[in-house]
Amino acid sequence: AASPQLKMVRKVGGYQFVLPGAISTAAQQMTKLRQAMLQVLAWLPEERWISVEELCKLFYCIAPTFNQLWAVSGTGGYPYQPGWYFTWEGRVLGHEPEDWGRLVGNCLGFLLVGPLNWFGIADVYVDGSALTHVRLHGLAHLFRHASPSIELDRAVAAAGLAAPVKAPPVVTGDTIKLKTLAGNAALVLEQIAQPETLQLNNVVYRLDVARVHAAFERGASVDSLAEDWERCFGARLPAEIQKRLAAWWQQYGQVRLYQNLTLIEFADDYALAEMRAVTAIDDLLLVEISPRAVVIPATAVESLYAALQKAGYTPKLTDGTE
Image (tube, rainbow, N blue to C red; front, side, top):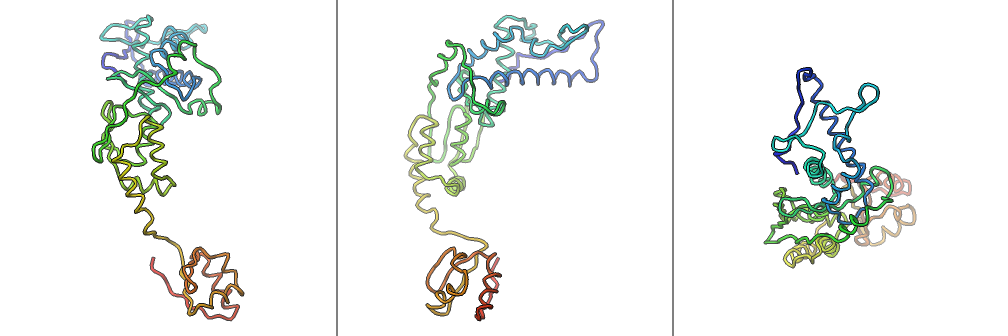
């Protein structure tokens, strides 16, 4: 979103000099600009595509001169602009809408494509190299612990009702390529694939069995992953990916490894029934493999061992392998 044509310049004249804290002051002023942007974005409708061009017009209506966003109080309470100004290709930016867009458009674009997109708060749509649309998720809750309660101007809202046409990822073997990475796209893809390249107009993921296994462990299934894909990209999960996921799902859970468990083996088919009569083993059972073998938590061994001794049994305790 940054542009090499846009520069921030310190104004130094005959009566001015650069103070030691000047750089930090400039950073604070830019922070105020970003905070103002976030405050406005937090009041916008969510879960709908909004034109960035219309969004810049909204910011222009709120503060038609960009220096108003961080003007500070001078002598007598009158605001003054510190000696910082912006240039575009060497020309000082004015207060015209076009110059406003050159500053705010770049700052807003960096905020949307950068932090908000990385954290999954904003989906972005890029046409070529231009950011054209944005869709917000949960920013209002972060700022106000509430859902947005105001709408944009009707013309602005109408421009953002329909999502722009967005091509689904291109799948070739294990490689998944897409033009731009929206916040929810990252969440969907990273359930099944490992990111390889994350650049504007060049996003590449590779299908990864470890990530798919982790998704299965969290309760996902092939059907739920396919639904997430279709909801995000507006197209069905490609057959080649569906086939791979189905094969991994079929193999999933055929072998299970458990930790911190204890196996109890009985000498005959009647010992378990007798133990149930004199101990609370039924409350501890995790798995009853057969009448001669059951599994209990390792933490319950000591109490069950004591109960068996009290009932007249002499169990043999064997150390397991860590």
